[in-house]
Image (cartoon, rainbow, N blue to C red; front, top):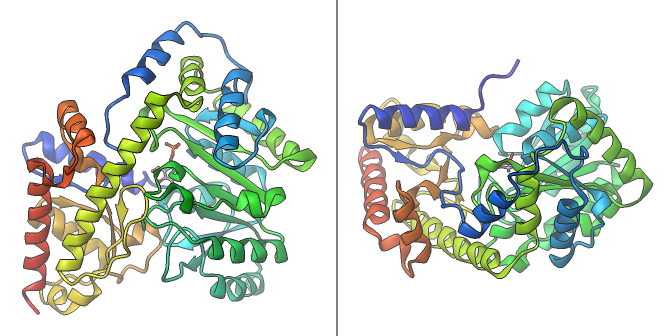
Length: 417
Ligand SMILES: Cc1ncc(COP(=O)(O)O)c(C=O)c1O
């Protein structure tokens, strides 16, 4: 059994509070928070007549478009290596179900991996992330963790990476990826590289995919949910390794897809084919959203650092993972001893919604939580366009007002020291 995803549950709870009239600053949900690009909407409208079931993996046109996008991004890809589905989440699940063995995950890592690992009857082997960045297990800790897992009769065969990372908003360096690939080779681990944020690194050249270093053992997933802020359209892709071994994995995943989702909706495939062909309006939209994510995540990071809170500097997307350990004495004085109690306190006393680190695999007593900054862009479509077009979005009144409230809350939390 798994319970409802913590991120979706918090989003529902915050929306219910807002509907009841509470003024909540929503930092709890990883929705990219931007309006639909009109050109993408037009491509969807044009595809609306496509009402037939398509091949399970997707139409040739849509798969060729995704393959072209990856190839232009430095990862040569053939259309046969691409499977499309309603979001990358079901593809991640299908990949886990299609592969044998237990799964190494970074700790902390995205909430869904642990739940899907449980659903597929596998065991999760969490390995702490290095100080430099999240999304990968610390290479120095990986081998001892594998040895301990095997002693405990686990059978680690799969390694999930998140590049760039949710929840830390960081991008692991080329060197970290190289060492991780070497270890995967040595221990014969299949890598699942979740690259849903690959286009949102503030420095696009900083993302290094293991698919180029360990091509025969790396599966890549991604989609339009974050890059184009189209989470509700549910467009995801999975890239299998080249050659016959990759084809066998693709066949197994397609078999699972055939019984779960049949195919990605036809109109969505038409829209995906258009978007992945990267016309100028799409490229500009992504570049503008990258700038906005960077500006607001950095401004939020500055609020935490000013309050004396440790937090990795954001390098991608719209996440921060602050650690309030420095405020522990003050927090304990208010009866707050766990991450969940801290998140509850922030919501109940300060109207600020964040997700406790425990949901990402942290120990309950850790005082870390994930902050998603993308819902600060505005409550209306107009505000969101204004934020996207602004040269200084963090100074817009609805964004700076929210950051001031966050600063006040942190100051109040720290005053019992
Ligand atoms: C790391 C990561 N992977 C995958 C997803 C889900 O993507 P999709 O909307 O394609 O299912 C998310 C969404 O929050 C995510 O953070």
